[in-house]
Every structure is written in structure tokens, then in C-alpha cells.
Image 1 (cartoon, rainbow, N blue to C red):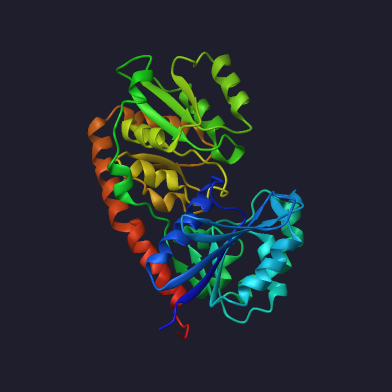
Image 2: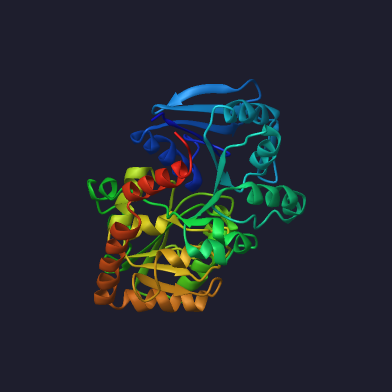
Length: 376
């Protein structure tokens, strides 16, 4: 039996950091344990020619682009490389949304299997969506299979319900051992103003859809807790100014960017993890898994996406309406004042990760889906 030839396609790749980029790296590297040959095609900001390199054993082709407009790179090199590489592939796996890949697929002449990973609808760039919609519909019709991380990705999408029969649930996963086998340090505890405070943790980009502004409003109503915010972004100065204006500097700690080892220590050291996102741009929230694996209860929001399907209301944490700072503060206080409830939900959270989001099981399932129906 010959090797299955897979072309992974995304906007960017490691060392670019992002949830989807982490996932594409995971897929590209770990599919190699099966009888496969994986190539990964991405765009990069290099204005010269395309770059070919090996990253942790994976052949990566970075196509030069002319710039990025409405969060979408523009690149003739990408289209040419896509056509060339598609001629050698059994299956093309495209991570969505990525309009340039739809266009490249249309021009490629590829007759093989096309699989999409649907990470999110286009939420913010409405003008782009108007232009992109016909191309998007073409690719959805062309696709043989569509991966979604949760049922919520289908239910909350403006496009996927009519393609439900093509959809397969393929959760995002983490390698549990990588999280548990760390040198634990009280990275948050040592920063507490009051050592008796309950430690509430958030990590993510400081951008509009993460809802950190709502979290700060909620924290004005919270006593007996201190909030730790890890991450950077365009709203950082505004959020810091708000905390200072409302005299919350003693109970709100901005940690900035944390390297991976310190981030894991922060998850392990917190008492409650909060993901207060306000728009379905937050399609899953892998950070929930990263807190849950350490036995931490999660407070998330009832978005029309996969978010509330990861940590389950009243089982592994609490779910509140998005943008509702009063409900969010009530949820924080409910967990902060009940240590037994935190521990019970945290235990169920860790069990849920082990049973449903173990990366090894998910990679095997991915391979089975990709190879399904291909004559080798």
C-alpha cells in the first residue's frame, strides 16, 4: 500500500502563533506516524520568492504575498504553488476561512478528495464576505467532507446547516502528558496582593471579541478574588486605563505575554479560568482545555459556536450570556465562595479532557477520515 499524500493548507504556520496555526502544526507533524506524506502550504510576508524548508521534519512551502487585506493575504505565488502541489496530492485539507485557498482551489483543476476544517464563519469582515460568498459556496459544494470541532460549529454557522451530511465532528485536542509533566510553580500566588484571594485567570489576545472589557466590568462587583490577565493586543492600553480609573490595580494583574512553560504554570496555579468572549469569532477556545486538564472549573459564554460545547454548564463550570457583566460576576462569586463546587467541577473537567479531547485519539480519527475512500 502506497503512502497517502496529504496537502495541508492554511494562512500561516509555525513560528507564527495562533490557535489554528498550532492545530495545523499538530496535524502536519503527527500525521507522519501513519503511512502518509504530508506537505504544508502557507502564505508569508516575504516579498521575494517562495521559501521551502523543513520544520520539525515537515516540508513547508511559504508562498510570498503582496500584503494582507481584510485579514486575507494576496498572493499569485500561493495560487501557483497550490496548483503544482495539488497535482501530487491524494487529498487537500484546507483550514477555513481562507478566501485565497478557495480561489486557488477553483483554478487548480484538482480532481481528488477535498476536506475542509471549518474553524469559524467570517464574522467581522462583512464587506469581504459579500465578495467572498459565491467562492465560499463553490468550495462547500466541492468539498467531500467538512470537519467541525463541535456540533455548535454547525448550529451557529450561517452556512453549514445545509451541508450537515458532509460534516464530521473532529474536536481539537491536547496531549495531556505535556501539561501534567511540568515543574509547577506558584506563578500567580506569588503576585497576589491578598494571599487569601481566589485566583481568577484569563489568557488570550486583548481584542474586541475576547470580552476582557466585560470581565473588568464584572470584576468591579467581585470581592475576595484577584484577576490575572495574560496576553497582549490592541486593547491593552485601554483595558489597563479602565482598571486604573476604577481603582482595581490591587486586584487586577496584567501579566503581558507568558512563554509556554509559564502559561502552563499559571493554568495549574489558578482557581477559576474565565473565557468571557462576546462574538462567535471565538469558535472553540482551546484555552478551556488547557485549564480543564489541570482540574480547573471554567466560566464561559453561551455563544452560537463551539465554546459552550467544550466546558459544560453545571458540570465542568458555568456558562453565562455573552456581554452580561452582572451574570459573569455572579458566576465568579458562585465558584469563588464554594471551594467544594470548584473542586467537583474541576475533577469532571479533567475527566472530560482525558475522555473526549485526547490528541492521540483525535489524530488517529483524522487519519481515518482523510484516507476514507481513497484507493491506495
